[in-house]
Amino acid sequence: MIIVEMKGRRSILPVLHVSALLVIGALFSQCEGNRTVQRSTTLAQETVPADSTENDLTFDTAWADSISAVTGIGYGPYFYDPSWPLAYSESGKMLLYYPRDSAATHFAIPGTVRVIDERAFQCNKHLVEIVLPRSVQEIGVCSFYGCEELRDVIIEGPVTSIPWRAFDGCQKLRAVDLPASVHSIGGLSFASCGSLRTFIVRNPEPPHFEFEDDPEDFDTMGAFFDTGLQRCTLYVPEGSVEAYRQALCWKLFKRIQTI
Image (cartoon, rainbow, N blue to C red; front, side, top):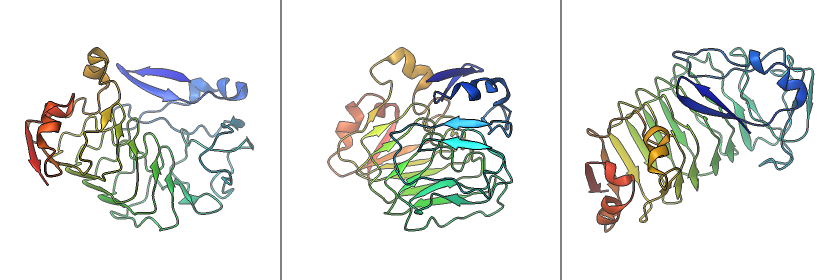
């Protein structure tokens, strides 16, 4: 794992093949305030983990022509070209990539999709609402990172974790609805979401936060870093209000009410 410091904020990259490390210096480019890590079109080979979440994952050559060779199973789109079209895994169970330059404000995720890949929607500038249907079981790190127009997020499926920086930088995000299946929330997952007003959690037991056991790290790496919660209301199941008021990090919400 490689941790990269960017203006005091840490980003995590997977361990890359030695050929990829030769071009590591070319992998970063700015996207509205240093908020994105782009795909390098000069990357000759990318090695991916053998324990991929989907064994039949393959590349759509229509949008991966700039990569001369891909080895292994699995994929993490840390580097991309904004011109690539919508792409899924061969089985259709994983949404790999949503076009960065798509002007659509809404997108219906097909019912065949089980996984939203890492950074799949990153830095799209037009998407306003996203509904993750009941079929979706997992979302990847930074999956909606920097989607500046995104305002409403509804997760209907049995997602168990909101990962690292999933919605970081969604500046206009105003409402989030998490299912009862969510039991953990990653660092910086809702960082810099200053428009957040409604946060619904349907789990009767407060989900655990990454870094909540280390207050020093939570101050800078917490899920709601740089997101003022003074004007945001947390809605929880009936009978759970007091549990959330006493729970680490959840008590940062000044208003906690019953759904």
